[in-house]
Image 1 (cartoon, helix red, strand yellow):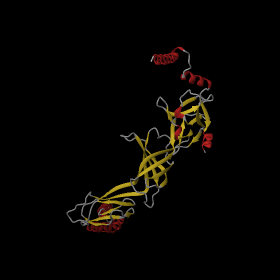
Image 2 (tube, helix red, strand yellow; image 1 turned 30 degrees about the vertical axis):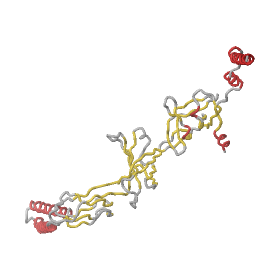
Image 3 (cartoon, helix red, strand yellow; image 1 turned 180 degrees about the vertical axis):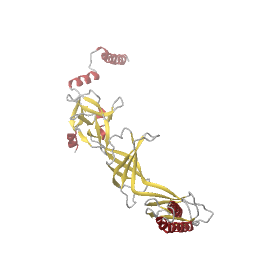
Image 4 (cartoon, one colour; image 1 turned 60 degrees about the horizontal axis):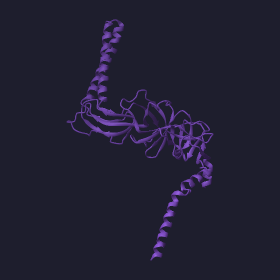
Length: 364
């Protein structure tokens, strides 16, 4: 028993000495080892892919959303009394200028024309009969003036009667398509004076109408070519016919009209359209869409690499957005623009800049 106790005490003492040695004897920590390794092997610069910026004159396009609009639209109304006795059109009818749309009741208009014609014949005959007597001196010359005035009054009465008769025929003011008919043939209980009969639209030419902000108005001129893409997928080419000089009161935008040929009437009125208008060429740089980044200040731009491989930020202005590329200004010619890794570096950081073509070839 005495020997076992002595052995136990010895073991406890040895363990205590081993634990205490960690506090009194010098040793090398894991942190110091990592520090030594870090000093021995310096950290490599972060690798980024760059492209050389090339400034070229880019003929950009101003792309705007708009709609198609009929060149002319009018509501045809009756200009005389009576009732509607004949309607010669319906919705969708193509009609030429001057064609009859509707006919109103006669209401003795033909009789008034016949009476006026008879009076003109009478006055002219009297004037011809007495002209010889006036020339011979048998009748005073003053009578000639009186007879000529009576003939002129009779002719004016005839013209008025003929105009009133013509008003019983409602005619198309221009060639187009009947878009709507608002009346039907009825009896005497349907007075027609001033009543709307039909709506007529002219679809040739068709207009593509857009609203342009004051900042984008510069450079748009009448006669310039514009490309129009309809929501149906059809692509057309037209010319700018009108650029407003006065802004719309509510939106402060300016109306621009592009004239499109539409002889067959295939382009409907009022559908959505995208209008692309080429504007004056501007020096710009083409970069991938992914190259754009946002600085801590909130500015949109690209990160570049200087001659000393230091990262810098360039604030840019977007000119045009293609499917995979962006046209921008604000980058000098020959600058090395970071196109891969730009979101993992910061201004002032030293990087390993590698041409993007080399990285692409390595991946392949």
